[in-house]
Image (cartoon, rainbow, N blue to C red; front, side, top):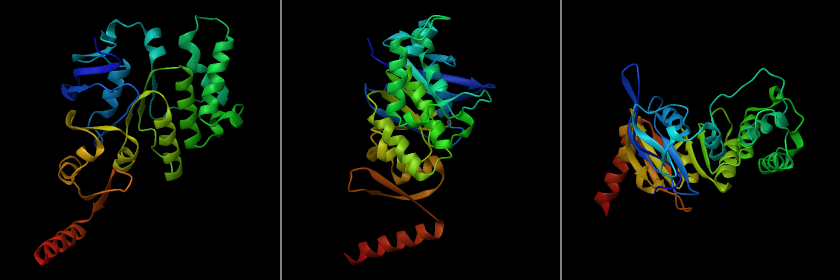
Length: 272
């Protein structure tokens, strides 16, 4: 029996056109998997399929070998937490209020919060560095702070799997790095959709690259992030070098810069 969350050849169509097409993914326990691909490649839809928010047209998503369609919503919410893009509200909630929402799957309707709920909320706030902002209103927070609050809400669910859709969007570089540092330190299985190839290379143990809904490459960043693949998937040329830390670094090239680089490499080979 397969442990954890997995998708086996899942497809999902929109308007008769496949958005996700025959994708399989089975994150290993405790690892961080990055989903890469241009806009429209199916990253968000795949995350929603893994979360049980959408049903696949074909194929199955399983949790510990059991089809997700047969897992009740409360049980699923205790195991799998989701942080989607552009979460917002006009309701005057505080940081503490939002994080407390993560405890809903652990309580019966109208049941009062328990000491266990309070401890889960406290731990989530502490883990995300938000203990000094518990009474601050959601609407007054910066983009980076809102992302941290949503992650704290997800952590308060005490899940084993965490799914995030473009959590670094609209964040400055400092907050992108801080957020991803936080994610990789969590003792969870994490699947995160990202746009930035270098952030994925730095923080993800494995990468799955999607193009037009299908997987075109999967593996460790050093195996996947190659110059030919980047040109194929993103339509741009790049130079990929290996960082001393052991992960690849992608430098995108203008056409003229690429031509000059090729000339320099040819000259170096000719002179060797």
